[in-house]
Length: 320
Image 1 (cartoon, rainbow, N blue to C red):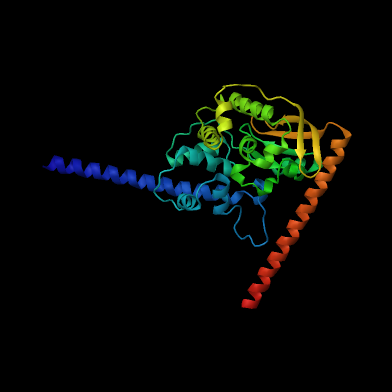
Image 2: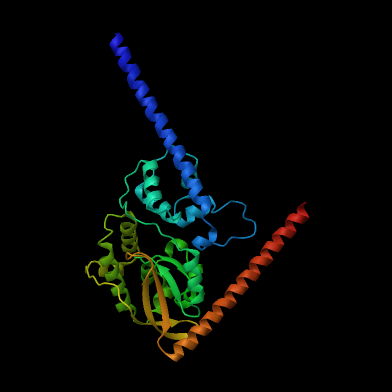
């Protein structure tokens, strides 16, 4: 009887110890997420700062938006709640928080989840590269990863195929837009050939990422949304990325013939800087007009935001 009691006490102590360890780990995870969130400025991830920001770095809802995770779910993580987090969610959060490899490994270890792609580098877009995008204007330019996600773009690129600022952040992917966004699709003069090559490039690069949830989720989402993608994807065509002359039909300035050039931002084929230089004098002039339209639209948006903020402040003063 004494032995049974001792064994039971030992088992209970072990279970209690494990529970305490899990609670400590959740607390560490919560603190780690807060520290990573607070170090990132809105400008680093392409978000407006605004004048009433009190939170250092990003807000919780902004991280949730960038990673397409529910705000409540992300808040529970930062509160150390006892919830199960999938590898796909952790991968999305790691990318939203621009974690390097060591930080990413620490995140997965604290969450007690196996990282399906431990060598991933969640490289963001530094401010220096964003300034480079601006300096390339009036020529369109963007930063894109190997999955066709648009990580950053300048004002001319914003309007070249559609108004990207009106596209939800989770949809700012060139492959997704090429198959699902009407305005983007209509801008491609040789659309059938272009989308076929894009799908083939995506499949070729995906060979190195077949186990990664984000890549599989992208294919599943496209298959569910587009019968055209299903048909092209089933062909199993592959082609490596290359530079060429591309032709677009911009709704406000007309046909644009541009030379597309890819510049890798690191030693591996991950994020790249894509530039579009005019292939003829007519396109050069049209890109300058498109840039002017983008500047005018930006100035108008800033004026409207200032008026709205002034009205809010006036209402608050009147209420007092």
